[in-house]
Length: 107
Image (tube, rainbow, N blue to C red; front, side, top):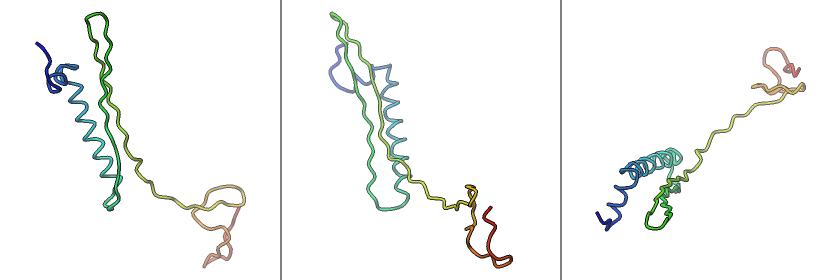
């Protein structure tokens, strides 16, 4: 069979598994982009690349697919803590006065 269009070629490569994996990666990328957008109206960018490498050895052509995705990092929220005089993390400000016992123990 002579391969005459891209659909035939995609169906041939890894018996169609590479094309299936490519479209699965597109779905994953869109899911991550939607999550990164988080309901805002910000523009989020991502990409999925389907690359074919060819090696010609006399009259045989070896085709190797490569699928790569670039997805945005999902922003994480900050957590604020305080550091005590002894270098430990605390959820309470060590110099803030307590309503019940005066200044907090910073040790």
